[in-house]
Length: 216
Ligand code: B12
Image 1 (cartoon, rainbow, N blue to C red):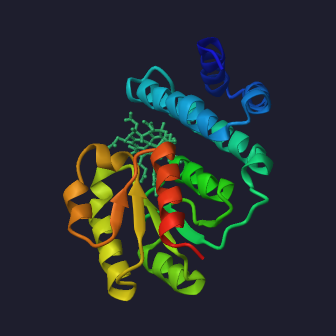
Image 2 (cartoon, helix red, strand yellow; image 1 turned 90 degrees about the vertical axis):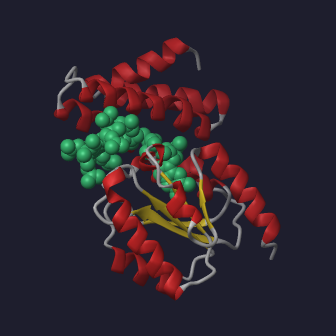
């Protein structure tokens, strides 16, 4: 994909042109068969740009909502390429913590796990802490993934990891999201077996490492 296509994708998002955006995505996936790259290098920077434009009042809240909705619908369309035929025995439960609405990033992470054959139970936005714990108890995943983009949600995050650790002292946890560009690493270091992953390629490296360590 060249820069021209990248600009066209952003343009499609800003216009709410789902058909145009979808055509760019399909063309990319057919020629490169690399959805991760499309997610990380096309959708993510486009949404970051949308965020900047929204912050500086260049676009409206409505245009931002539309751009996000189009991105999510395109990700859903690509799902048939996401699901792997080679299933692995691992499970992850992941989603946004309580109050957190930004779900696109962690949905991408869920898809990367699916590409590796994992069963990824993606809970989406704003999962109340108690319900997160209930669901972990029900599914008994090998791994837990938590996402937060807003720094003021740290207290809620801290409460959740304390509760998870009380009930599941050793269960590995991965965390990510833009809240951690402003800090929060000390909180992660204070707890056992929690790791911060910044993007899809770090997540993919982690998956390989995890599978080597937990061979079944
Ligand atoms: C879309 C959007 C929304 C939508 C979200 C809808 C949805 N369905 O997700 C809505 C309208 C709800 C929204 C609301 C708000 N938003 Co908003 N939003 C955005 C926007 C434009 C895009 C977010 C996005 O999808 N990014 C693309 C994804 C792919 O990137 P990502 O989340 O960083 O994910 C990557 C990594 O972080 C990592 N990762 C993420 N999660 C996880 C989890 C795990 C387990 C792992 C391993 C990795 C990982 O991997 C991903 C792939 O690389 C951003 C702009 C931006 N810079 O992102 C602003 C932005 C995040 N929002 C912002 C703000 C301020 C808000 C509001 C407070 C606005 C308001 N006053 O109401 C509210 C807060 C809502 C809430 N309680 O959560 C600010 C946050 C600034 C900050 N960090 O403090 C941003 C940066 C905009 C800006 N430039 O000011 N928003």
